[in-house]
Length: 113
Ligand SMILES: [Zn+2]
Ligand SMILES: [Zn+2]
Image 1: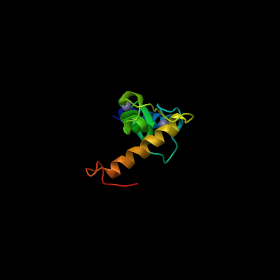
Image 2: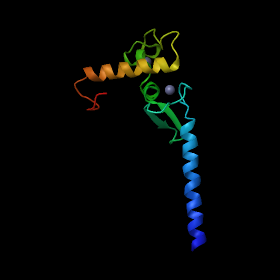
Image 3: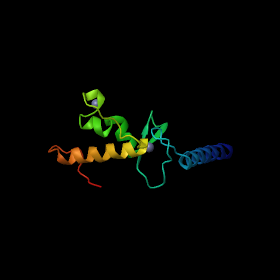
Image 4: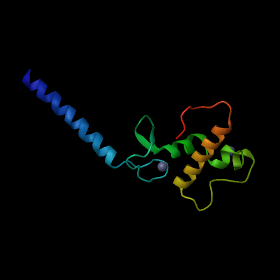
């Protein structure tokens, strides 16, 4: 019985250690920048990969231009802003999303950051 208890504790310790390592080197799957402490992020690929909050929005909703219907796939000419990093373009997509959501009578969320 004692041996089993010790075994169980050892298993718990190893899981805790692995989780800490993952947190220490979280890199955003979308923009390749580190996800820093205090930054909002989401999980993708069944929880295996992490992405910044804004990058998740960029991945799921598309670029700012796409949300405005001005991108190539919507018949327009715009894409992500030229010269912007993927992270910067993602931030713009999130801002656009918040802006559009704010102007829509049917609000998706009730909390405002
Ligand atoms: Zn990112
Ligand atoms: Zn589009």
